[in-house]
Length: 293
Ligand SMILES: [Zn+2]
Image (cartoon, rainbow, N blue to C red; front, side):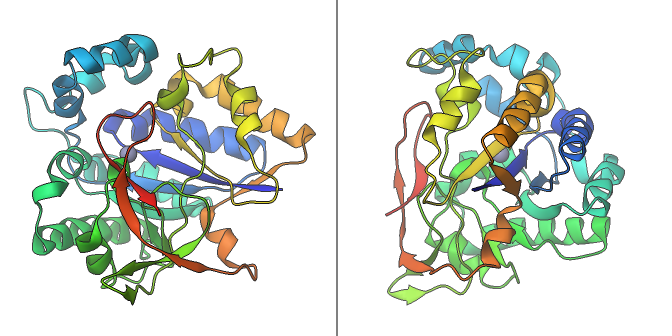
């Protein structure tokens, strides 16, 4: 049984510290994964600062956001413009590519996308994709083969704009199976490989899930006959929960679970259906996210 392993990199700190840590852990277990990079300014501090609202404060305390992300992330871009991740940390990103991992585009500006996507027109969306795509190509010397929108915030305008790029697939939503998205009755050309499993911050502290039993909880959600895709974050599993993630990969071996980049699912002869992507809610996450329906 194989789990698709997706690594989201949202911040400067995640790129600088979390990514090399994850590369070491993956090398130790002889694994490859898909890395989705945020490549432009790191303004995530702005985002996390805004989240200091009562509803979110509970989650901050529950997941110990400051421990999880580090205060430097919480403050990044709050008082000063955020640093350009792709410029300052190009060597880290190039190194991941040279190690043979799959390289995908996550965002130009993660914060801007997740807070403004509802009002962005096609041109703005296209420009944001283009900036990230071009910068990644400049750094790695090859075009990114896939993409994944920040915070699972996708819409039909995004899907239409992505058609201009030659992505082998996109991973823009939560769902259950690989599918071609349909927009206005028309089937798009790039398949979607949805994420099927929850992220750390969505479940920790809920329903008795703690750091002690988190790995077992994730194993319990795996469906042997179906698509399984797990997202880990460079900021979380690469730093704060690195040891726990290492244990997860180790324990998976005893369960005969293997891991691979998401693109490896496309090599088999699996049937790819059609679905649409709609906004919906999932527990543990604030606001809407894109869901396969
Ligand atoms: Zn992200």
